[in-house]
Image (cartoon, rainbow, N blue to C red; front, side):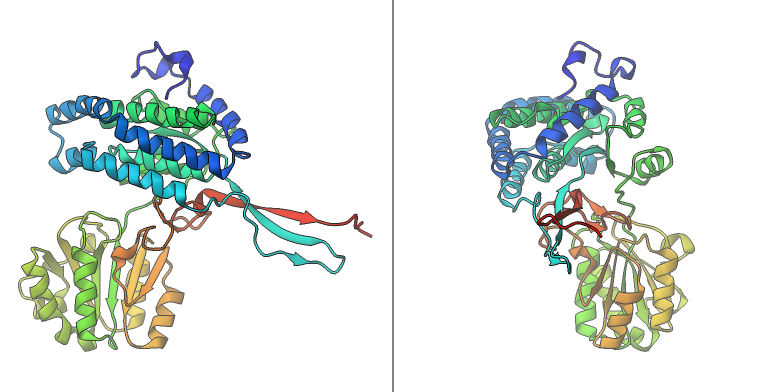
Length: 430
């Protein structure tokens, strides 16, 4: 919930909303969370899950205020669907909380130690990042997911959701704080910003004394603004302009099925294939059948000249197509001369998210995984596997295209860091 000192302040008035106070409270809570037991954190998450179910009417009443405003504003049906706290959505959120509660606690785990010649034992211990600010758009489920992951990994968090979900997020913040109180964890371990004024975001991303990292989840506009203005380090998720390359040594049937799955599993996810690259030696065997299969599924195709010679119904692709994350039933296709040309195309146009090669050639697979510089690089798999659950990480906060400090799906370990821990028996340095 918001800072209690501003309980009577207008929720949309950033001038009276002290973000520094939230930062100070979060820093204090983070020190308490560092010593919180795994049992206490799991207990809080289970208490939150129970309250999501028990307080369903209250949550849906508050969500209804947001839905009415969204419909009046003419928000797209897909966005309204994301905003809706249906019975199913609340049950899914509760199940997610229970799953995170059951996951191993990463905090305090040790790497393998080694013993120095003088007998000192050297290892590293996994510890929380500290205080995480999360800025996101209209999905209220992110409020629960982000709070749960940060709490489980021992981090205090400040959550600033989109204005479309303002009342929903405040209500979810109440549920979260009730769960914390049940196991005597600090109330300020999770704080929901109580204003929709964009100035609050500007304040949050400059609180270097209190905030250790900012994680944005949203569109390109939000990410670009934060990247330009934030003084706090970001773990950012850029767009997912993902590629599948069908090599000359690919099995045609396998390549067909992987490409179909990569594009049509779900169009709106960041791991959806947006560009298909096909080696010239196999293009004539692959593209006519694949083009027909994609067209039958309603996918609009845009291709280079060689692609259009094999799929006449395809529109002409432009440079804009190569650089676009469609998040829709649209696919760009290019025929390339070689593996080198495929790697060069990806280096030029990829957002660094997820790429895949389909091949039976071990050398080509090895080169692709070594030379393609994206956060995830696959062999003989569709790019839609880019998801923390599929990696065995459980829930994730997003897919980072950063190189530091976390890259790819960011789960519990991605919300921690390491410190060195040394033990001895009084050794002195000579």
